[in-house]
Length: 213
Picture 1 (cartoon, rainbow, N blue to C red):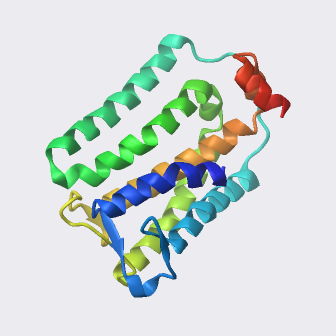
Picture 2: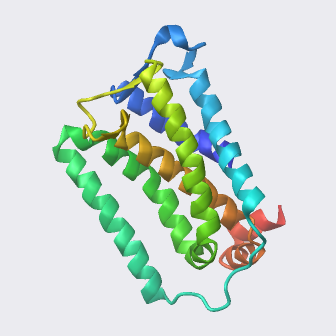
């Protein structure tokens, strides 16, 4: 999970910095690669470990539900999620103030969409465990982010954000941490489910090879 987070997030985060969505005080970082501070790379791993560790601590073993949702019900969930993300993304194309928010939604969309597609039944069964962990870890990271911004360790562009904030914390940052924790907790929950592995293995040789490995 940490390696996936590192690979998937690095180019996106570098793009944000190049676009001036956020920046950092150069005298507050050890160094950079692709303009991303070393500490930011550490964060990719640390958030994954924190969210995964807390989820595994409070969760209980569960298998794929035998009475799953039909394709029509699953399609409603996926369509609803797609319309929300698409609306925000299109809005961001025309208004600079929604630029950061639209990039967040576009970035997390493929991961969350795949997770819902393959594991909606399981995620609904583990709703309290998954989203309870998401909320708990998000509150902690919201506080850390608020503190860093208040100390000018890093800054968020006022021109590329909506201007809505909670006690000085931009709503985009709150959504970012919430969505990343969703990606991590849902990913761990689905990855560890044995019945889901069998389901994926039976869907093609690629997943079958992963399961054997």
